[in-house]
Length: 430
Image 1 (tube, helix red, strand yellow):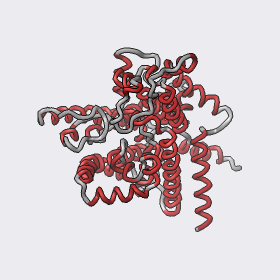
Image 2 (tube, one colour):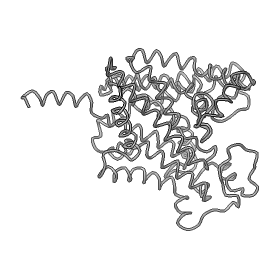
Image 3 (cartoon, one colour):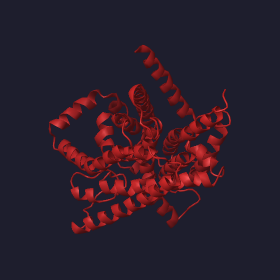
Image 4 (cartoon, helix red, strand yellow):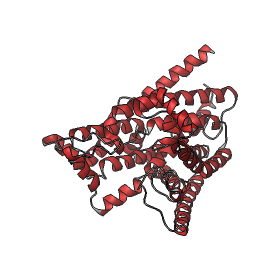
């Protein structure tokens, strides 16, 4: 080892070391989903409602934006790969995408009891990764342009295609034929068209956030100046998106009756002007994506300024995939044992979950609430009543304990090691 080696190693470490702030942001993304599905911990009344409303849609947007950041980290960070390195990066990402599809479909099937209360996002994640493969070679500017174009065109194109499908056209026939043999659709309603266009987090609407995240990941995120610009840009995007949406909605005389969240109903194109959670409209992307940028910038700065104080959150965020899967399984268990309504969920849903024999049979994708309307007792009742607090403590405590013995979370390690083995095998077979 030469005398220059320490300096070179230090430089390499500076370029490649893990950005703790991204893990902290990742924790807040999954924490927002916990709040939606379990309730807001240590909070009641109006503050609980406000936090839940703020998290709805925005936590998902943050999760998707961070997927794009991760893709940039997997493909050279600020310097896009070229030549053989580009082919290797694309192979790794494609293999990871397929694995996420498999894991996500299996998890969706295992949590089928949750019905309309939970749509597992992991298989959608897999398709996001696949669609992002052609963009890996782009720098930040090119990725930003692609994100802007996708945000302006994608939601409108998605609406038109879904409308065309509903009109019983040839496209609808093609989709029906594909769905009849698509294993993802047959197993868990997570086939290629479900993930691309018809599902709750369709890639046609979410891709702009992925591309924006990739653009962010190409930047020097260790720079305070870059973080300030990210935060300011995000704030402006959110304000502009909400304000322009409000003006446009007012100009068309308001919105007709429609969903409080979810994709735009094809009967009412006016909803394309709204910022409804999970709608995937251009304006919702501006609002939720802008807030996601603000949260990421703040988390990056806090990570540097607080030292080890936020390590528990960063450790939990580094195991976000594992925690998400566990939370989905726990939610399914809650519904099956009849304890889900005990943890501070919205009143109308708590009433629905407790109807027992009177539970409607004409509501599609109904969760598997107990038909006798019973609630658990004893320890099970206690755990369900305080599930928001219990799961928050678990989601911080479990990763801290796990990381004392293992370098990565269970699912994270399984996916990463499988990707490594498969890519090495593919490389040898060429």
